[in-house]
Length: 455
Image (cartoon, rainbow, N blue to C red; front, side, top):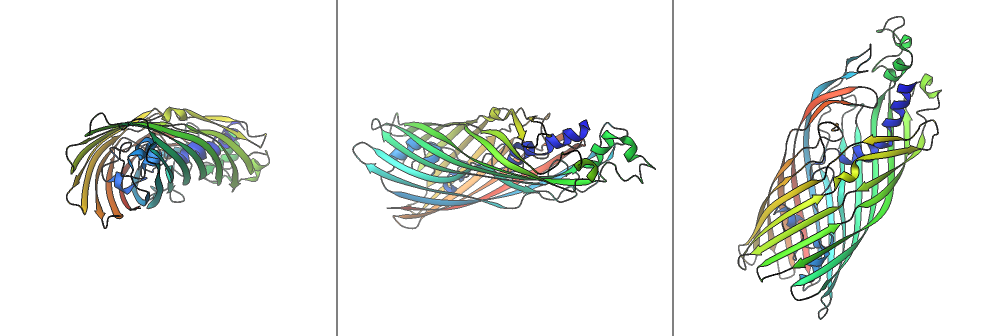
């Protein structure tokens, strides 16, 4: 019965909390989403904490709002199109006398196009004090992926969805004519949904091998991959945090910005619903529908931005951003069903760095062109990487343009191509006792469009 207990414990909210959050959305490392501005995308988000003309500074660095001399309303949407192909194989009931090759296909393309919105507004309130306020709705983390039913990795993952929405309310003030500070309050909503198959047959064989070998392994009622069920888990929570920053202009041409986004703690509350549970397993009281909770800390983000304005038409920007993924070293899951004891899932993620370099050229009063490159480190490692975490280091290539349709209205467009180092799986073990080995071939194309109105 120990194997059955283990399957119960690990299959439920742990994978929903972190596995679902971290799977294939390659917009940024882990499950971070940088894409809150089509304008910023065009330069690979270089200068994100000093870009005064971009409404996204409400969330990126409130201090940069102080350079705004007009009311701004900005909205944008980014379409993230991920292509990911898996090649590999595995073993069911690995390490047992009944071990056998996993059956199933490669899962198809798990991710269709996903739209990520961002809307912000900035209002200069008091010219003498330099007080500026702003608000933004954005999605700093999230993904949606779905593998085909019956694929070879079905015991690790099928459906993974996460939606994290922030409401950020910020204020900035000029300390001097060259130095400003800002702070923002973040109200965050997180929702998670996960499904994966469970190999109940392997659990039954671990309990009593005779049930899987009589009269023969081929004709027995139970056995690895013969008695699959499924678990669907949903959880949600709200949390609060803050973002704070500063901006300094040591010369008329050089601007330096720094921002810190705090960790945000969640206590996800959800429900695990099981189907296809064999009666012999259900009689134990395990694998019954139950409530579950899990604490989750979304990471802090520290960003340093620099912009140098060569002249009125040409500017160069750079960013270095650190994401504190070490907050996801592990996740502890507690179940309402007393027969399902708490468990700890180890992920051992590391903090990561994101580096970007970009530039802008105002060709005319009507058109401004942008380009940028970036390198994004992965928090995952070969020991704990799983099909829910097909993540690796990434290289970005970006381009964009702004059309100033009038003195008050501008339209932004951006494009990014992301090349992902091939993530590998090295015998990763599922909660059902299977192992999976293989490689992902992944890349992504991002298309952003936005509108800014100044009044």
